Length: 115
Image 1 (cartoon, rainbow, N blue to C red):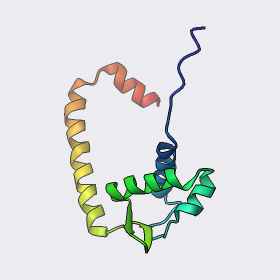
Image 2 (tube, helix red, strand yellow; image 1 turned 90 degrees about the vertical axis):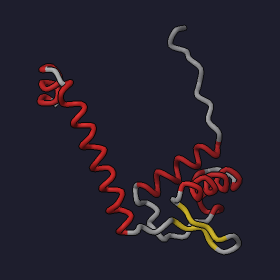
Image 3 (spheres, helix red, strand yellow; image 1 turned 180 degrees about the horizontal axis):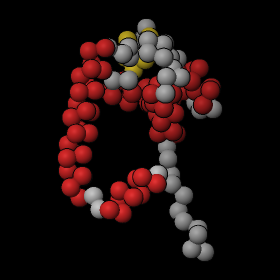
Image 4 (spheres, rainbow, N blue to C red; image 1 turned 90 degrees about the horizontal axis):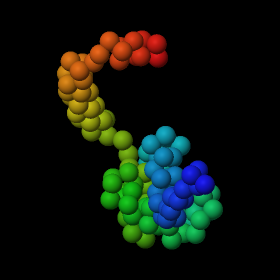
């Protein structure tokens, strides 16, 4: 009975959020595309309520933009913001390398080479 463990409980709004976010990040829903709660709810096999809650969270995170009673759409990609983000990510990667390399052992290097 050791293999039986508690099942992770997730809320439908969380599942909707993850599915919609993944579709946006993967480019399946393109920047600027209008999204409708009813259509996505149907595609996800959910009611509109969890999709609306997911929309609210995605608006808060900046992946969606919404004008009440008008539209909800995927936020457009702004080239300058992408450049700024890339610079930050590059700096973070550089820091990680500077901290990690001195700690590498021979076995770590061999594992990377074999991978």
